[in-house]
Image (tube, rainbow, N blue to C red; front, side):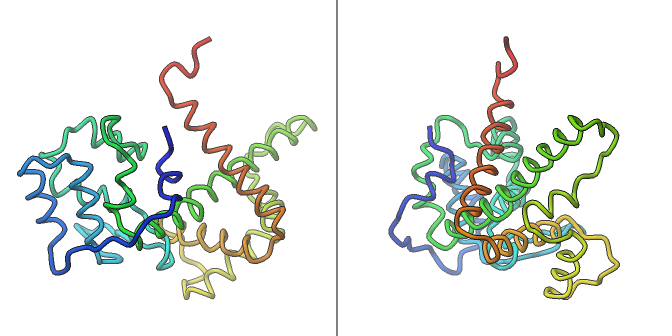
Length: 239
């Protein structure tokens, strides 16, 4: 079975979406009418136009950098409104792993989600999810090398990771990011700001690296993601 990002990489035709329809009300109505919940959820996502909001004191930013669609965050927001109409175990599986029930045909996602959010999803997947996995993979490489050289007690490898992946110090890039987006240099980044920084780093890497390094780093991030996904599957640790 293809991963969701692989399905969304395939070409699609533009999809019309309804205007002036409340996505939350639509979702509730579709679920009450008996629509399969993944289909209802994706139809509602296609109509969502609010880029960011604060609900019950919590910040929700659905488009990182205005380009990268954090679809699971929006899924969480929508599910909070209609949670009683969705099987709890299936909803939990989606929000924690990004996986729909096996009975759902994920080839429908492209049509249901629409062109704009499909592109935004891919931006988020490669710009945030894969970029974080790349950083983790390089951190593991650095840690392994340090241990083999007798350094078993260092627990922060961020500087080495930044130099290896971005060829610049973490402090320099953090400050450049803050200045570019207008964040205070002394404030601690929120979860949303950290995602924005990761996406900014992805774009920085693409801009400053040659094609061979871009391809190699992206593959390393994807491989790390696949490894982590495999380790979570039931029976993965069985000998």
